[in-house]
Length: 279
Image 1: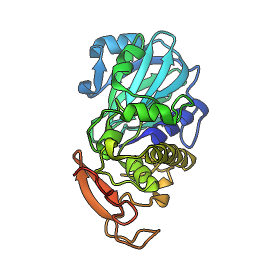
Image 2: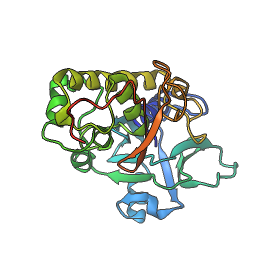
Image 3: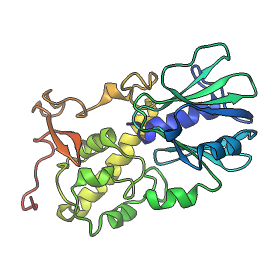
């Protein structure tokens, strides 16, 4: 699933332009063809068409894993799900198989939201924050996200660390890849609970989260399923997707378990179970 670095990479590409992506600022949307209605989260499909058509894109933003296009009136919100991406096609080019929402631009191009696994969503909102606020915790790369804020977010919680990192209400934007990589860099077992962490370990995890997300941004995210061909962060994974391979630090085989329904990768030697921790 695209996480903060992948979504932020899309935001930058759509704002500034990039490979096969024109800068999408100040461009008018003529009309919208919704080819898979269930991808429209709100309002109704017909209301979505009416409220998006005739607007210009004025700015791009991101909150957690959500991508936001600020229009003349309202905000176009995308969640890329597991495989959502964008393409820009001339009017005479056949649409790809998984083109589910097609925006016709005043430039003549068609801006296509495609999603093979169909877990993505798109919405038009008059104001995004009432929709997003109850769903998302703090931004991990924000200057306001301090070690003290992180310690307060963990206080009183009993879930396993990996499950907490996947909970968007606890922290926005982190998913399976970056959770595994951050826990490894912090030397923390994914099944440990917050109450078993020392203050130093809480700070180490805060620092590791920010480091791994910045690395992901530097490498334009990670490529998987052929969806994000620009990404290079997969070439720098320390544990994710490396089950059975030797740890780069200690040579012990990387283990894989399931936590919160997700495959979880860690080094049992570098991320030991802490003495006295609750099972």
